[in-house]
Length: 144
Image (cartoon, rainbow, N blue to C red; front, top):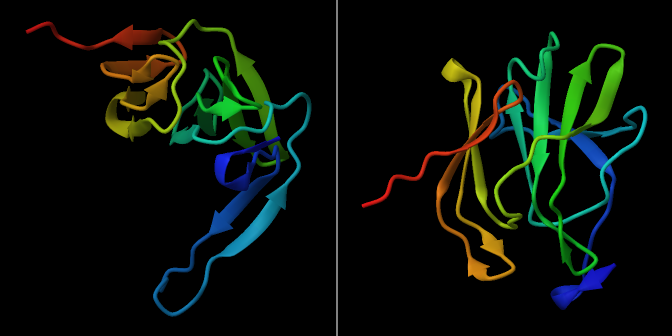
């Protein structure tokens, strides 16, 4: 669907490969075709890679938030980056209120994703939230 500014959501997924000397060459992009079900196309979401994800070996990236067809995306997905090819899997952990245009940052030392800010149904969102797949979401906002 199209929104203000003619933005169009898509469920296409591309892997960007950046050269070692990025200032001399353009990155290459490879279209990926993940196995199984996949999330609905959205904009304003984050896709954050953690080195160890979901109790599986290998890398995993987590899709959180965003908007699609005029609604907030309240679902979360894991993208397992396997040698045999990528695979999407829905995450059933209850999270913070859905937001779009937030910031998610990986903390590789503790295998956490840190989320803050964004826009929700009631305007600007606040708070600091931590996520790992084994424990789920935790509100890390301190009062005062």
